[in-house]
Image (cartoon, rainbow, N blue to C red; front, side, top):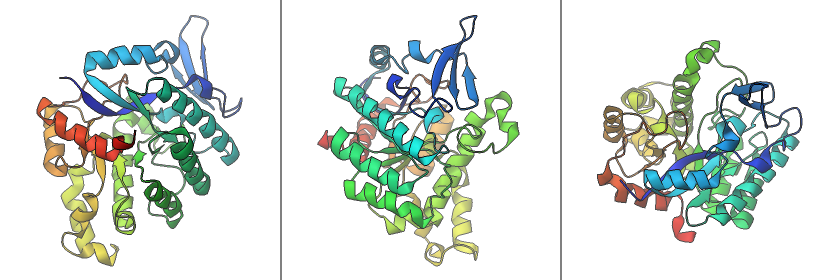
Length: 330
């Protein structure tokens, strides 16, 4: 398989280390025995050699992309470094440094990389301003945020960012971060066996998708392109029951009770197809269709290489990615 566009590739940028201040970091280091660690605030990840890996070495990434048949990759912030819960001023400074570095990396390899902007979601107005700077001055192609930052996706306060995306004509990508790192710990059981990487992420994507749909975001902003990671998590497993909820429960907004309204809203969203296994991929296709799906790999991540990408869909999914990412402007 060769020549596909990957929308799901996280990076860690050297220039961003320490940009949120000495207390928060982020910081890379190693123990006396040489084991590397990565610190964000009080949270520490052991054993991942970021600096020596494709997460921070562009040439290693390019060589691995060649082997994987990836022609173009959309680079995005590592979810460990969203920093959506630190002080607003620190977040604004951090995102500026991060995005400047992202733009430099993309410019150096403009035939192979495009980049998403990290946004300070503690302050929605500041996030919209940073997005505008990143698009108009840095040449990045959209915003990239977590799913939990203190403001729900259906909150009217989010309309400032949604309107900015529409005015700038750029997509907004949603990808969870582990709770307890960026925000309060949601469920201590998720820390056992790294279950947060599957169960918590899937839950967060379901909640984000539901908030967007039931909150009428796609109705108010029909031109807004939101892409949700991992096929929307467990959303598609519950699609029919969410439809019933929309049509039958009195708590549902009046407009979504109309037959077909729920599906119309859901079908305006985009999803990357980074789901593992052929059966899971086939199920996602049966629920989502192919018109709003793009390739995603979590390139170099713990589950990289596990997904099923049929060669017959390359042309269609590449076309979808070109549309979603506005690659005609690059």
